[in-house]
Figure 1 (spheres, rainbow, N blue to C red):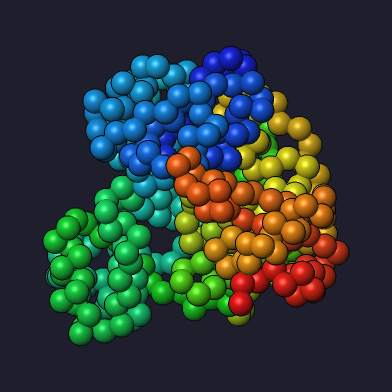
Figure 2 (cartoon, helix red, strand yellow):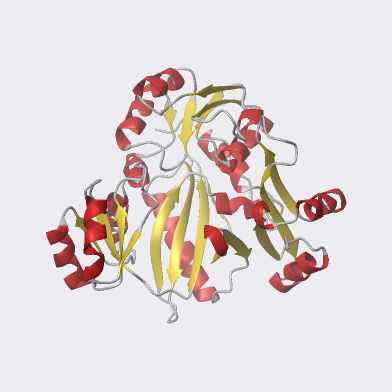
Length: 376
């Protein structure tokens, strides 16, 4: 159950992503101490943490040690199972409701929750063996997507497309590692998301709908405003705010949507905690998603959210020319820069994003072209 925490108390962060580094940085700005639990010594969180513990794995011993030394804890999705979260809840303040604890670790529970509350999701079925699979595809049809139900297992992100019976042997191999969720494949025209931050008082910030474009090598580019009909945007926001209230959110969620050519809106999933895609809020809004998340987790009030720019595109640093980025960093006050250097790495080994802002998406793209920002 979420509590209120005052500056000087310690926020524990489990995970080593850039998003966690941004959360740690934001917590420090608000006067909180930051404790970090990671499995790799070279990570971007380290430079913003009051202390950091490196462990081989997030086991019971590590979680007990960490949970007993902090005032509130948050963890990246996919690192812990439900029992781990329950252990942390017994040791410290875990800003997750019972519904969110289950949804953040189990895809089946997430889907069932959304379906039970009348949100449109792709048809789905629990699969434990080949017979389940054969029966499910008779209803769901081909193609379909097979996903592990548990988000903390090693292959949780390795989804398998089932195009026909010829893919059943691969599916059986995946099922040997644990129960899976079979989802119908929805042919979508657009992929978009809404990020909501809410505190225990019920105060809520709704960030602009952002569109996600898939680039090469599993890289995602985020754009605002999304090229989506206003009525559809309104429905996405209504759904996201309803979910946040239903789960008793204290912190942040990002609700992901699939939008068909007929403007039918499917809820593709709910990601609890930090969203790396929401980095576009740095430089484009009055309060970044990360600072807002700290305020919500610690029980602070949430100020009014203002949109600072008409358009923004977030470019992953991995596709940019570093020299051009450094040039613009020295010249620009209107763009957002989220740049991180892991402790122990060379000074030019940076990760993060550059958020290009402008009056329109076309204006942002012209700026990128003029500044030769993209790597050749």
